[in-house]
Length: 402
Ligand code: ADP
Ligand code: ASP
Ligand code: MG
Image (cartoon, rainbow, N blue to C red):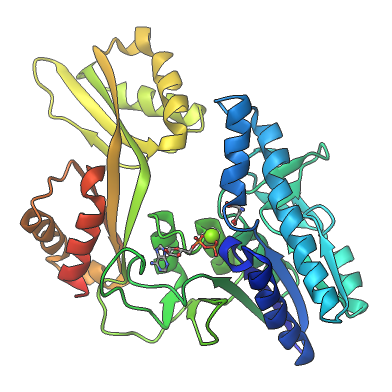
């Protein structure tokens, strides 16, 4: 007998028919003699719709605490509906909200981190031979308030359960049949991978491939949870995410796109020591995550610094920089939200010269200008005008993967 954790995303439980489809997958596993814990997301676009409802009342959406209270409701609906379907099929089942399943988090509303899971209740339900359905994406902080784990956070809920109960498998069911070399809905000739390493998957997820939430991959690597990404609609093997994979002859594992990027330019800074330190120190104090950084060559004693942040952190960044207006005495502060980050990822690129040149050539051939560049051992990212984002992904994918 094994313990299997299965996670189903919003589209997999979008309507009654899909809920029954998922109930059948779960009960089949149970009939095979296994313990089954299931994590579900809110149905379809429920989370987005709840955000819109809040905006009807307050265009800014309200405080993060109240938004978490609101958004967590989506998963409460889907767990109960799925449990009702499983009851109807005649199997013992119990649905649990995040706090009932023992999810303790920090108090960073809307982006909370799991501190630990008190597994007592889940163990007791397993002992009673129940199928357990857990609300993903949510937990409870030390004030007994509901928190959420950030968009796409149900993946992390599933991996966290698998890690804390040492499950034999963690399967992430979604609306595509695995991890591809690029978003298969957008890119022609995207290829499914049988296996991918944690590190490569972590980069792809962080750089915009939403098929897995990046925190879930980070946690899977840390606790050595083998993940499988597979389809809830087609019964076939998906993609395994693990430490070591059989090397396929593929230098570049994937191409990812992130539209959720804003570039911020601080113009006319004094060209002297300590300026960059003061700027980025202030941003760090405001918990702003800075991504690509570009500093211009100094001229006439001044320089410009441009950097990127996620769209959601733009206001926090501007607030931080404004606090430095008198200290840094810059001339101008500009933002550009019409940018996208296109990245290639692959552990093989480290030892192969010419990868960057090939990527830039493919963008040149597509007549797309590069605004900023950043590299690491296993990825290269460029910032471009967002209106060319899809064209750029296709061009880069054609160049490396075909
Ligand atoms: P769920 O609701 O099941 O969590 P998501 O919408 O979060 O599903 O993630 C699945 C989607 O991720 C797919 O429909 C696909 O369009 C998108 N996606 C982006 N990049 C990739 C990739 N490299 N491989 C597979 N899917 C990808
Ligand atoms: N329902 C949440 C979201 O839409 C969590 C998830 O789907 O994983 O982001
Ligand atoms: Mg998701």
